[in-house]
Structure formats: C-alpha cells, structure tokens
Image 1: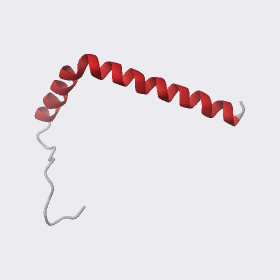
Image 2 (image 1 turned 180 degrees about the vertical axis):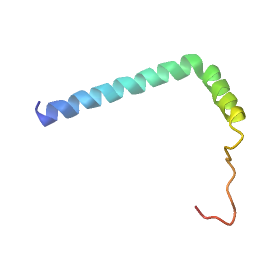
Image 3 (image 1 turned 60 degrees about the horizontal axis):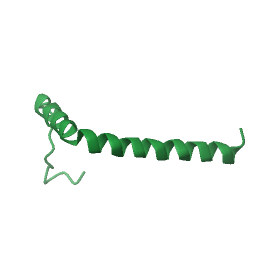
Image 4 (image 1 turned 90 degrees about the vertical axis):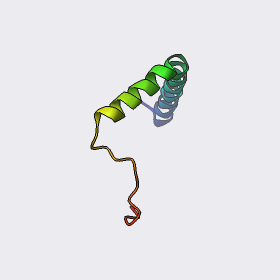
Amino acid sequence: MEKNTEVNIAFRIWNQLNQLESILWDRYRAEFLNLTIDQDDMDPLQDDSQDVDDPF
C-alpha cells in the first residue's frame, strides 16, 4: 500500500474514533465519571497526592 494512502486511511480512522469518543462521552458522561470514582475507591493503594520532597 502506498504510504500516503496508508496515512490518509489512518487519519480517517483516528478522526472517526475521536467522533465516536465524543458521542460516547456525551451519552454516558455521568456513568463514566461514576465508574472512574468507583474504580478509585476500589484501589486504596492508588495515591494521587504528590510528595513535596520528590520532584518526580
């Protein structure tokens, strides 16, 4: 397959995936956010705070 054709196809797929993502978020935003909160609650080892002494 010609490289330019492959890039054009990949770009169109990427664009359609972005459109699908927007549609899904518009439809299920509250549910997705609730799932994210539930997952955070289920993982007590996850630490979202930053250590002041550790710059990384």
